[in-house]
Each structure stands twice: as structure tokens, then as C-alpha cells.
Length: 345
Ligand SMILES: NC(=O)c1ccc[n+]([C@@H]2O[C@H](COP(=O)([O-])OP(=O)(O)OC[C@H]3O[C@@H](n4cnc5c(N)ncnc54)[C@H](O)[C@@H]3O)[C@@H](O)[C@H]2O)c1
Image 1 (spheres, rainbow, N blue to C red):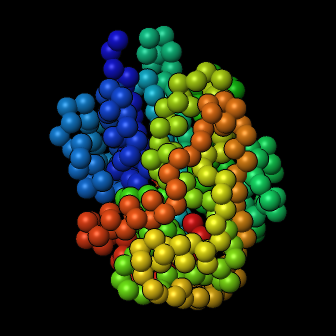
Image 2: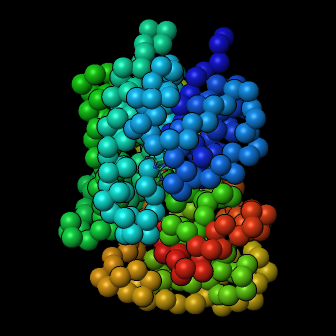
Image 3: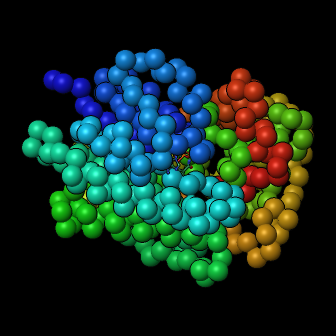
């Protein structure tokens, strides 16, 4: 059997770099397109010289009509995006354009990229729990309504842009038979995630490593479910490889909620630090009127039914591994934490 030819957009990013390693270990020939806007070449240092890896540093839209235009792929993992609440608040126009225009280009590319052995490439679209918006449901099911705030609140443009990506992908499947799978990642955490763009675990770990208390926004009772990237990544090729998943939307993550104040204390405990969390009002952390979500918990019934997903890595292990990575990488995420970030993303 010839190796599976896989394209990973955003492959130098946090989730993408773990996926690159996983697919290379599976025997794939892997092409990565990444403009290094939030990703880092160092994330791929373990595989930089791998003979089955091709790294293209470019904007996705230009790479698709340029350096990878003539490559044929069996599987495409579309992870490139503007990610994180802080990034979207800082640059709403760039974030919306990246998340929508690049996905339009990617889906059109996929439809003309083939057929390989008589079929179109299978395409995984990375979406987000943010598509649920401020839905008041205790548990989010894939068929639930998406509920957003006003368009004047930048916070919602990330979720809305991902929702448009989902509509586009499902429409390409319905109208042109493109085999797509949409994955709504809930909070995915682990080594190589940086705090700079508002991600809470590396931000808090960075604060604690720097000897300060972890910053907790609001009253700290808001909760999230954290899943280790090393549990999440092996699921992605399984979803693309299972015909029953094509044309479907899946929640992916943990369903064990942790409040932000508990998270701060568990990080202090796991790292043996005796520092108390520091409470920060939302208005100071973001901007006046910022709306956070009190909870975000996935219903995992569907993904369990299709492929039997079960997370295995506990939060304390993840926290210690994030800390070890931050220290070994010279404090990449600590810089983010010192800017005062670390909401609930
Ligand atoms: N990490 C999470 O908890 C989480 C949660 C929900 C959704 N997601 C989704 O998963 C995907 C990966 O997220 P991540 O956490 O690894 O973030 P990340 O920022 O580490 O990865 C995104 C990558 O895309 C690259 N990129 C951005 N715009 C690009 C462009 N125009 N052309 C080429 N490359 C570009 C960046 O340089 C980066 O390497 C994203 O689509 C994100 O929306 C992640």
C-alpha cells in the first residue's frame, strides 16, 4: 500500500504539530502549510528532517494556488485559523478573514484535488465549542441551537466564523459529495500550547512558574472541560477513516468540568507552589462589557457511539507536562501570562 498523503494546515501550531508526529508515525507522507502567525517551527523540531515531511511556510490561500497546487492528497486536516479570544479581540478583521476566506479556499481546493484512486480527499474541518455561543444549555449537544450576542461585541466573531466554516463544509458535502467531518474541539490543552493568545492553562502555569499567583478572571466559578492534546489527536484520523462519520459534526474533548478557581488551585498543587490565585475583574482583563460563558461542557454521546472515544490523561499529568515544556522552551507561554491573560479559553 502506498502511504496516505496528508495535508495539515496549521501544522506548526499546538494541535497541528502533535498531529504531524502522529501521522508520520502512522506512515503517512505529510505536507504542512503554516504561516507561523501563531505556530512555531520549533513545534516540529522532533520531525524537521523526516523524509516524509514537507513543510511549506506560507499563507494557506496562497499555498493552495502556489506551492501545493499540484500535490494530491488522500486526507486534509484543516486546522489553520486565528485562535483564541485575545487574538480575536485584538484583530477582529484579520481573524474573521483568516477563518472564513481560507476555509472557502481549502474546500474549493479539496473539490478539485483529485480524484485520488477515484475519490476526493477526505477533509476534517477544525471547529470549536465557541460555535455554541452563549447557549444556556448545561451540556452542549451537536444539534443544539447556536446563540450569539450582538455583532458589536467582537467576542462572538470567532464562534460565528467557525459556524460559517461548518455551514460551508456541510454544504460542500451535500451539494458536491465532498467527504467532510466537522470536529468541535472543546478546551484542548498540553505541551506546546502558549498563553499569549488567551489560553488559560499555559497562562496560569506560566504565572505559577514565575512565582506569582495564577490570575483568575471574574469570580472564578465559570467552568471548562480540559482534554489533553495527546488524547485528542489520535481521534482525528479515526474520524476521517470511518465512513459513518462523513458529513457529520462531532464534539471532541473531556466532559469533566473544572471551575477556574479550582484550576488555579490544582495547578498550584500539581506544581507544589504555595501561591494563592489572584482575582481579576473581567473589565480589567478584557474590556468593559466582556461576556464570558459560565460553563461549556460537551455531550460526548455521538463520538462515543461512532468511534468509542474515552480520554485517558488526567489534568495533573497535563499540568506537569505543560510546566516541563514551558521551562524547557524558555518560557514561551510565560511571556503571555505576564501580559495578564488567562481567561477561560
Ligand atoms: N486548542 C483548543 O483548545 C481549540 C479549541 C477549539 C478549536 N480549536 C481549533 O483547532 C485548530 C488548531 O488550534 P490550535 O490550538 O492548535 O491553535 P494554533 O494557533 O496553535 O494553531 C493554528 C495554526 O494555524 C496557523 N495559521 C493561522 N492562519 C494561517 C494562515 N492564514 N495560513 C497558514 N497557517 C495559518 C498558525 O500559525 C498556527 O500554527 C484551530 O482551527 C482552532 O480554531 C482549538
